Length: 174
Image 1 (cartoon, helix red, strand yellow):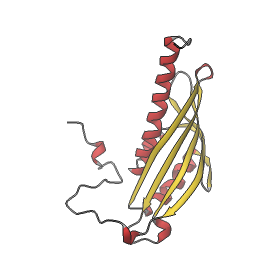
Image 2 (cartoon, helix red, strand yellow):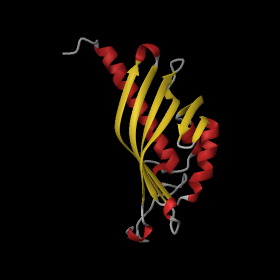
Image 3 (cartoon, rainbow, N blue to C red):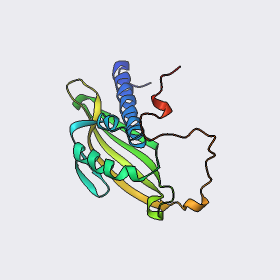
Image 4 (cartoon, helix red, strand yellow):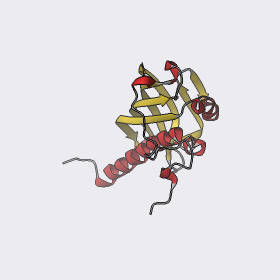
């Protein structure tokens, strides 16, 4: 039995869940090209070190929005996630393993790739508000080119995801 009081354990659990949901919203925002959703994952003065980019969150979003339209599909998948909150100081470290798929139909090999990376984040809860990213470092672990010729074609009769707010995820739950 843990010696930590139940209230403290519950607060830790709630913090971890809130941080996990920020990570998931970030992926949805990038894959659906929802700039407002991506921005909502960060504190306004956050710093992001993301591949060749390092700077503020506004600059990062502008950088990404120049790159992402070249892809027809992106899919960011989060795997192992370790969240370590320090509730007394309202900070947390999160390490999330990610595989990011990028596809450009008919594009060159460099535009059809999967990247293994880790998001190493400093989350902060300021003024009793939400847990948000204050600093993100992305490490690149590996990159693999996907050969478009070996991809299985998607039948026209199947519903596919959209890279905007017309995607089914934004439809009302019925």
